[in-house]
Length: 378
Image 1 (cartoon, rainbow, N blue to C red):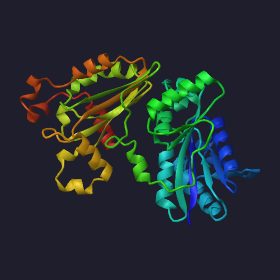
Image 2: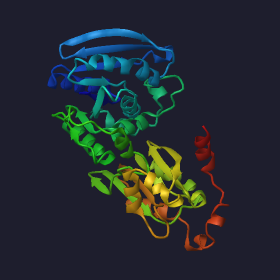
Image 3: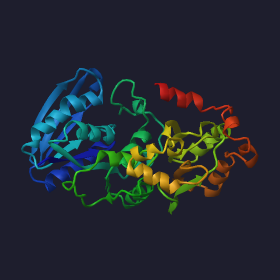
Image 4: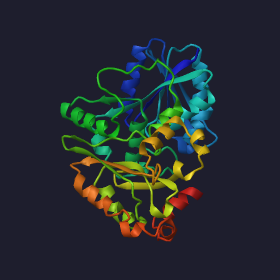
């Protein structure tokens, strides 16, 4: 029988520690492992192991390379395997800025015979989260970077921790903070349950990391729908016509500065065979080529695609455009739905633009090219 493993992520160390303490008390025989990555740039990491009774071990670990992946592969996985023989539950208390997805996938690929991932939790500080999700600083500016050269943004990491989780643990003492944070989480991750006084089940059936990934991957993501909770608004924009690259590029600043979080999939007229992913948080946007649309591939590709990808394509299917879709979602305070729709609609090809067809579209000047092509060759 495989030993259940739960990951506890989150930018806030005190909130994570509280969640870990609750799990240890709720599951006799559970063991928690935490790696303090403060010194990872110098290839030094401190590993802390504890159970409900207190500290079991504190050891300084020397790594060959200063990266989180090395820590996971060289120390975390062997420690989990070591304790799997005796622990009823293994709790991985992740470092502040570590995203849970790479850890979950490493567990599934390298220790699947002994360990079963049964939960991915993110601990959230109700007082700090609504402010931090709007902050535009890089991790390096906040002291939370995991290694030299880490150029991720604070809000970007928070969004990934929240959206990938199977359960969100909201901690705080102020009723207004709790209410606002719960509302924000409800917009960012509407399909994920939020817990404040109780704990989710973490010793049940193993999770499939492929399915976890599909919940957030652009082609299959479970995106929020139109919603309004107090001043927090989520606006969905869906269209079929292709976007003009120049017009959309000119609109980017207004779109991302007017919202806190936006994401989705879209297509440009000059790249009509390629699905593009839109990912923006706290005023920073990323546009990435994530592969071909199914409509641009041979029929046999449908058989190779996952059930979730086929289902998403079928839901978006149109006899003319196939599964190509403009599906972008924006979340922020008091968003103007009509203004966002009008702005994005003005970026679409007009009927006159569309008449010449794909051959002429391919000649459009594409200001996104430097960003997209750079990522493809990196």
